[in-house]
Length: 592
Image (cartoon, rainbow, N blue to C red):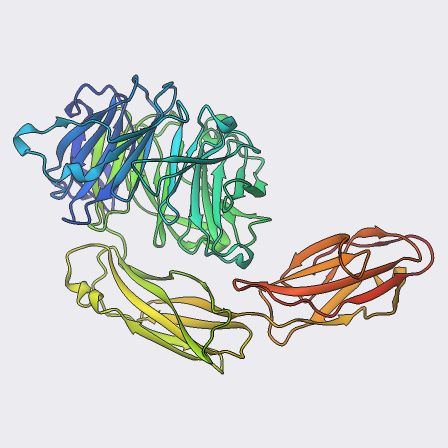
C-alpha cells in the first residue's frame, strides 16, 4: 500500500485517500481498454470482488486482501469487442450488457462460481450461466434489488428507453414492459420510493438521465408506466447519470458535455425531489478543475465522483439543501492532465463494507483505494409509511425495521437510539436486534445495527400516527420519522355547502375538515349526484383547493372529497350540490 502523504501516493496526486493497489491494464488478459465496474460481496465468506468491465468482457478481481488483489477469472463478451459495457448485481448473479455490440443481449453469471477456483489456475475463463435475447445492444443495465426488476437502457428496443425485465428468477429473465414515451435513456436510478413525496410511497420510481432531461417515471405498473416529470437546466447538454441521496430527497446529476461545450469547470447539478411531479434545481457545484464528470454515487453524507482525467473526487453533502458542496478528498488517476477529454476514470464503486473503493479507468487499469473520511452514522427505516388499516382484534401491533449504519470506520461512542416523538393514544417501542451486538469491535469500515420499531394502535383509531426515532451522541444526531396509518374517516365538507350559488367573486374555493390531517385528498366535481360523469378530479395534500375550468351558467354541479393513505381510499364526504348563477364564469386554478 502507498499512503497519501504530502499530497502524493507514489506518482498520483491525492488528498485523504491511500492507494492500496493498482492493477495496470496489461494484467487483464487480451484487454485493450477498461470501462465500467461494480462490486459483489460473497454473503457466505465475506470476500469482496470487483467486477471490472473491459473491451473484451469482464474480469473478476478478489480484493479480500486489498493490497494484493487477484484476478480470479474472465467472462468473455457474448459477441464482439466493445468500449461501452455495463453491469449490475442481484441475488448473487451479475447481469452484463454491451453497447454497439449487436446481438450481445443480457449475459447472466452466477457469482458463487468465484468461491472455489483453484489459485494455480487463475485467471480462469468462465462461461455465462444464462442468457436473455429480447434486445441486442444496450448502453446500460439498471437493477432495483428491492423489486427484482432490471432495466436495460439505451438498447435497440423501446426507443432506447426502459426495457423492463423481471429477474426475480435470475436464470430465467422475463420481459416485463417498455417505457418509451421520453425516448432514449442513458442511465437511471430505480428504487422503491420512501422519500418525502408521500403520494408515491412504496411506488417503484425510476429517475432517468435522458440526455436532455432528468425524467421521473413511475414504473409500479410495468404495463402502464407513467411519467411524473421531466426537468433540465439551460446548461445541460448531455444529462448522463445521477444518484439519489439516501433519504431520496435529492438527486445529484452529472452532464457529460457541459464542460467541453461551455468551457466551464466540472459541474454537479443538484435537484430537490420533494415533489416528484415538480422537481426543482437546488444549485450547481462547480469544482476548481476543468475535467469532465462521468459517474457518481452517494454513500452516507458524501458523493463519490469518477471525473475522467481528474480521477476520484469526494464531496461532502452537508450543505446540499443550500446547494453548497465541498470537496474533502481526491485521488488523481491521470496526473498532469485535468482536461475535459473523456479518458481515465470511468467509474467508482464505493459500497464495500471494508471501506475499499474501486476506480476503473479506460487506459490505466484498476485502482483499489482507501479514503479517510470523518466517521459517521446514518439512520434509515425500511418503510416510512406503515399501513395499519383495520384488524380483527381491538388492538394490533405493527412493526417496521430501522438500520443504524456506521460509516468510515466509526468506532464510538455508541449512539443512543430512542423514540423521541410519538402521538398520544398509541403505544410504541424500539428493540435492538440481538444479531447486531458488538459490531463496533469489528474491523469493517461499514457496519450496521438493526432495530424493530413497533406501534400498537386501537382499532377505533383513524388517520396518521407519526413516530420519530433519533440516534444521538454528543457530536452527532440522526433522526427518522415513521408514520403509522389507520384507515381514514370521511372528511366533512365545509364550503361551498349544498344549495350554494357560485358567483364570480366566490373564486371557487372548496374546503373540508378532517379529524386528523390526511395524507392525500381526492376531490371530485361531477355533473350528476351519482358521479357517473366526473368533470374534474384533483389530488392535494391540503384541506382546500381552487379549481380552474369553465362552468356553464345556471347549471347544478356536485362535489365530494375523500382521504387516501397507504390503507387505500377512505369513505367520501357527504355530497354537496352547487349551482352557477348568471353567465359563464371561470374558477381560477390554484392548488393551495
